[in-house]
Length: 372
Image (cartoon, rainbow, N blue to C red; front, side, top):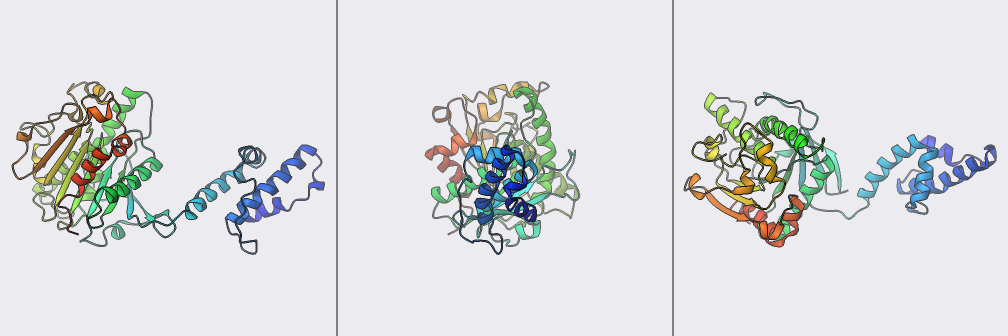
């Protein structure tokens, strides 16, 4: 690709008959000069030159002339632009099930995709489960996003959450932030899209159970679930309870584990009776030590939840909340109605922009999790 670009960059304008094509060749050479230097190609000037690089018209015309080359260069430029940004010390990882099929039970193995943010160059790199869990004493803060998230959205939100936690809880020892990214890109209008992702969330709960089953019992864990992420969390806990009862030795037990588990639900899109005495997830109450519940009684998206699963026709937990009496006395519980702050919005970014709610979320995740 580089050799092709250099050949085009050195193309003589006199060898092109059309005056319009000559102008475009000249434009490509001019624009390529900025790309070439920013990519640090050997034997070329190391100084970064950005002439013509950010001109929309120049980039558009170059793309019309060389579409395939421009597509490859755009990807390279995106990576290098990240590399030239300021280094960070964020310990952020991604566990992805976006390329995995729908399943109906916890698998014996799963080819989940794992990436980590390289703090040296501020760029995402492929990794593996062993590297993610290399230090059993390092706490994990797992973020499970909701519907209509792309991979880039999930990474960006996880990074925002990690940095927000540092600002809100500066005295807490460092934690490793992990985003559990599932296939939730928008697919159709609200109700159709919601029903598709509602069903998919149950399948990803099985994958999440497999992932949690590989975390050491002594490692502190915080799980921050937003919207449909609450279904994934509770389904995973239920799978782990069943696996422990069945005596499965390939996953770690999760009930009454020695490491602390904090649970944070933000606008949870799960049935309101999920943890009630006769609820479907009653057996999961021994899987966590603390529950921080943030609801929004004015949330217009959660207002449609009864139409997502027409067989149940129940309100969302994030819309109506739950009483303290449903939980054991040894489980810490706090609940907040964010309606006066958030209004009818449903996006997690709106919650994180509120200093009060962001502190409530981050404190609920890290409280008593680790000692500084």
